[in-house]
Length: 405
Image (cartoon, rainbow, N blue to C red):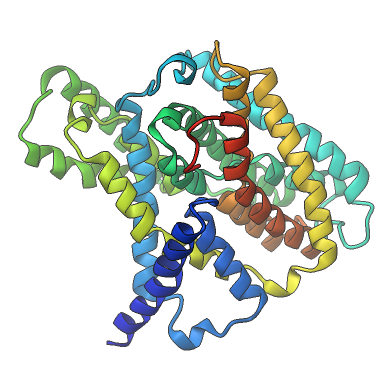
């Protein structure tokens, strides 16, 4: 009974209250940002939420599953009117090479520039030197955090976009997926360089099983798209949890984030099956009524004592570097040909969102002694500020009818 009461308290604090605030403020900020801000403020002010049973065990599990569902439905939406919009809102379908090239520039530009700026101007400051690695490796670690885009939060933000802007959001999501994969690969490489081969574990039969599972899912989806286009609806619903669970587990087993597997699992389901599912309704329900517990709990995990005025000032400088380099990279080399200036800037505005991915990366690097306590606190503030600016920046550059960004 105690766990149920804690769940209700969790729901009230991180779901109902942010929803009311979201409606009262006319959706100025994305609803996924509000629980994060609330959790961080509680951590800074040392609000004794533990006495309320928060975070609750059930709330943790429900929130995590909801975010997996958000990633899965984002992948499914690749097959639902992928070029939503007309006229200036239409997005030309990019080739795979152009998409990967745009993702590489969108990630590599901020990473290189950020690493150089941090090495030259930030690491010489008091408290910024990494305790257990060389200054170069410390700068690269911070540069990786600056370059990353927030896949979980971005999924929620794209879910809130109006239909005329959904194509821009989907394009940004595709780049964010590549960013996220590069982040986890980069983290593994950094740990290998810092600690040697012992940082990486040799593959076991589970890793090979994960690869085979992904290949089997993709092959089954391709076969069904050609030979089993219109099965009974119950078959489609039965396949949904199989694809979601298998994709998430396989990516986790391969050392990648579970959200990457969930996204790709949705993307490789047969298009004719996807069109018969209530993707929009399921995603919206998960976003508003379940996932906020995950975002709120993540905010609570931040060390409130590390958020000081000096870290805030440093974070503002990092915000400027992050936004300018990310948006500049997307503008100079867009991920699709034919994008208007507004569309390029809109994609860049979405991709500059840091959110939980930066928090996760910074936490790992901090635990390994690859960034300092001061740098860690600055990155936490950067994540909050950049995420909060995502909606206003997107509305600024996207123009008409972006009221729900």
